[in-house]
Amino acid sequence: MTTTIENPHTALVRAALASGVSAGEHSLLALAKDTDDTQLAVIVGELPADDILALALEADITKVSMVHLFATPEQMLAAFERIGSNWSQLAKVPCAEDYLIRRQDIEDFLCPMMFGTSDEARAKEMMRAFLTKEYAVDTLYFLGIGQNGREQLLTQAATAPFARDSWQQLWEIAFELQPSARTTMRAHFQTTLESAKDEDGRFARDILNELQRVAASHQPEPVVAEDEFVDI
Image 1 (spheres, rainbow, N blue to C red):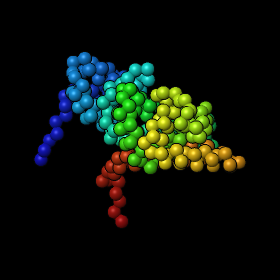
Image 2 (cartoon, rainbow, N blue to C red):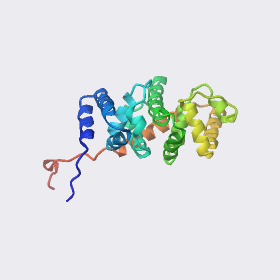
Image 3 (cartoon, rainbow, N blue to C red):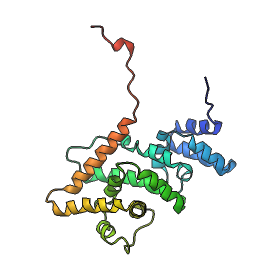
Image 4 (spheres, rainbow, N blue to C red):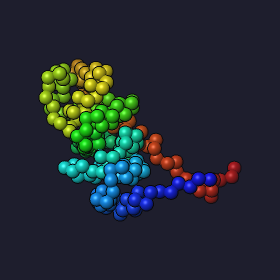
């Protein structure tokens, strides 16, 4: 039987995280002063998805977090797939704030994760990984719902200006890597234009519920105590 020994630096970060996300980030920053990038990549690479998610969502968006610098595409995906576990169940008739909070969570996670290093190659590597998921294009479209510039980016993307490090740049990279994503989003937008119903609201509910289902699929099965079984 092989026993895996956790890197002592990783153990230190995880112990700090048990006291709070800010403590975990401070621990990583302290280690950054005494270790090189290769060692930091190993430390971050050993953090489980729940820790990556917590650090990414609580990071100061005006600064680059260690997880933004060193998380792998696989870690990014695993963490994102748990983002729905932070949300309460949507009401049957959600209010605008319900959507805004969740949209902000998604944008605050994806944008720094892809653009935090200002490395275009890394951003594309992250986006390629994200686009392998069935929910990816719909998630990106959700970020544009209710936003200024949505129609322009969908119809005039070749010349439309966009805000860097934002949902708009996420769209631009997705369109470059997967042109069919633009076609899919245009179809969603056309449905909104042609329908008398609140298609944006329906779409938002559907993708948010899907992300919560994805998160639930990663939750461990509840342990049933032996005394809960009843002989028949």
